[in-house]
Amino acid sequence: MLVTDRPGKRVLIVGAGNTVMGDEGIGPRCIEALEEWFDFAENVELTDAGTMGLALLDTLREYTDLIVLDAAMETSHPAGTVILYTPDDLARHQVLHSAHDMRFVDVLKSAALMGIELDSVVIVAVQIKDMTQWILELSDEVEEAIPIACACALQQLEGLGASYSPKDDVEIPTELFDALDNYALGDE
Image 1 (cartoon, one colour):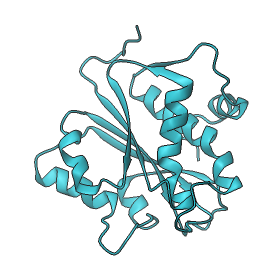
Image 2 (cartoon, one colour):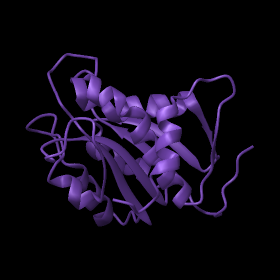
Image 3 (cartoon, helix red, strand yellow):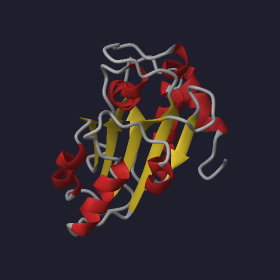
């Protein structure tokens, strides 16, 4: 059984995005990869939040920390670049799914108004190339970023004192381990 070094911590890792809109589905795809490759401590939960918006509020009540995997656009970085954001930073680059959609930062502000307090929130974003509707595949650049984005989320998880371990008999891309070895928390 995996345990955490910090009792009382409950971490939620969320994959945000719409998987039928090309690169916009990077968040849920990263959640699928993490669940396929790793086992997580009991205090860590992974979820594909899709485009839940305010529906995520009730879920947030159960956690102390939040790691979000999401798409970003217009960052001036090449497609497939992994960027670590605060919620306010992401707001300028967040992908909106429709005119009725709300930014993730607005969900967090709504949570604060409801008295839901999180100790930390970090967003691991991937610069997208294409968001064509009704395409299930990611562009090559964004597909190649999955192991790097997952490594970044795992580093954030380690920083919170939560643990994970590779599953037996699963092939994990070497790019993930290279990223864990070569990019330290806090490096830009």
